[in-house]
Length: 278
Image (cartoon, rainbow, N blue to C red; front, side, top):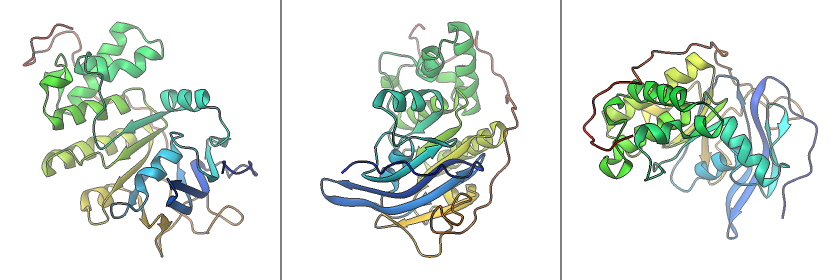
């Protein structure tokens, strides 16, 4: 079974939109007709128990998986009909991804891992390093900039992964339980940094977490609970879900792109506990 034939494009007021997504892992349904819209600058929390389909939904929305049925649109362009290469470029250039486990390049230092999206996009080495260190410092990780992943504890590696997802200023950040490897206080701080960055730069964020995670639900403009691959009763599907585009209901959009650059850190000289040369 393949992705559904493209229908009429969704309204222009949502940066991300999905209709009637179905996906199964080895015959086991993971999504069963999920529809939602995400407004520009909105923080949306997808909540639910383990096995409810949260990660599968994020992977379909970000183009990592093609839905077996249904549609995914980004900025009024279809994602579900793109080639593999085009979806990879979309994820590289317009999306950011934070997983439950940080997936870092072991041969690279922390700042090099963060700078990787910028370097792949053609930014100069000097400018990429400056921006990478700025983001590490916002996450209280400037002191590990020259460390390689093997020298870092799990929570520090996750900070590096969060910085890497934000450094290029993506339109949408997908965060799959981003605070799971962190202690409660550290997780709340990282989540505040993620949300503040999204607010100041007009990024949309789709993050997942357990339904009882007050930090996740409290940080979001709107929650979208999933149960057994379906939208839970009473959840609002989002701004795009008007007549003809899904289940109905209107979600509130968040602030638009502000263009603020945030605080700048010193990229040329810093002290850190690692002796690895950059």
